[in-house]
Length: 285
Image 1: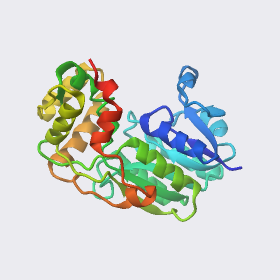
Image 2 (image 1 turned 180 degrees about the horizontal axis):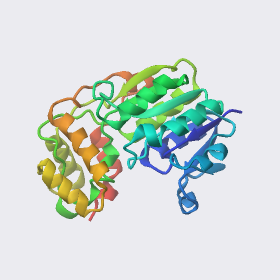
Image 3 (image 1 turned 135 degrees about the vertical axis):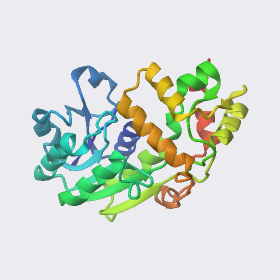
Image 4 (image 1 turned 120 degrees about the vertical axis):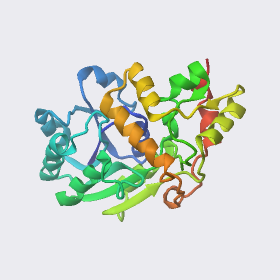
């Protein structure tokens, strides 16, 4: 049976991808960056490999016998050519035949984001690829932005009044598992969003109704957002990428609802209201 390697498997999306692959009876190997991270590997996985994009000595064991790869760019990597190309080249030489990349909606039009640079590397590599160009993850609200919601009852995001076609990572995982295990998705790019386009003010209204307490949306300036994120310990490169993404939101570039997620899922995508209801405990005081 062909092995599928899932990078970023301890993250929100990666865990859902692994869950979907295991449900399909596939052989899954997940990568972790160090031994201490092994305990965070998703349950049910038989193979765990140490893998670091910047450590070529980890490549042989990670890619041995791998036929397909789910690729996630680590947020800390900004220099894609230097820090990701060697691993991609090794994977192709080792026999990986299909790479499914977790990309960003609009990456093909925004060459400044790192996702676009990864896409270009894959397209030039000679390997079959599939780009999952995803909208903003709903789960970023209960991870990256959870502290402000819990501590201040506020969505502290510099997105203006721009609309966002959010998507639940559970839907991304289900789509990725299908694309990785079925033929016919090679060299295709799928924009993946939910079925509704919301402002963060509307998200705050949904959270207010579902959580039973007032949640506001303060719409800070990019500078204030960067300052708050630095105080919370986030790296400068990550903050810059986030500010860039929210700038596209302010400009209305994240608002389009695409049908591909529903088509690939065979059902309507999860709504924001359902997401908040399912994750209410995460936003509790």
